[in-house]
Image 1 (cartoon, rainbow, N blue to C red):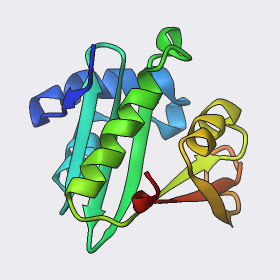
Image 2: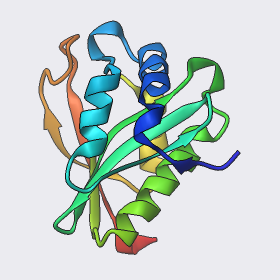
Image 3: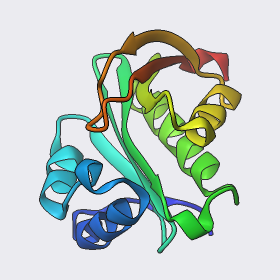
Image 4: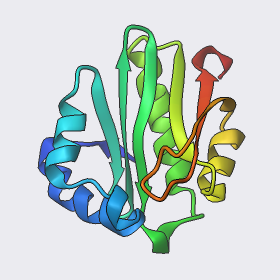
Length: 144
């Protein structure tokens, strides 16, 4: 099933999915997700009952705010499809680059992002609640 645009009415279900995909200290509730979607330039996509991505594109730059895939559905292409939709969405919104942070310990997600053309451009020490570092990744959207 291809990703469809994320709607405000989806947030309760997305909060449950986020809670299943992230440690409790990092899970966002429906209100937090609604706030992210409502940010200037906020947008997102969902694959029903499987995963979603929230992103933002403003002033020529985009960022992935969160990407969550249900644990049972991982490594089946959902994350890649959601990331591709977000990259396309950023381009159509006039962004030239996309950024994201990913835990240095999250090798699966890091592998996905690197295979999608992102490169490491920075490090945020002790960024996550468990004390792990975040890799800052960037992708030029004109690179295809």
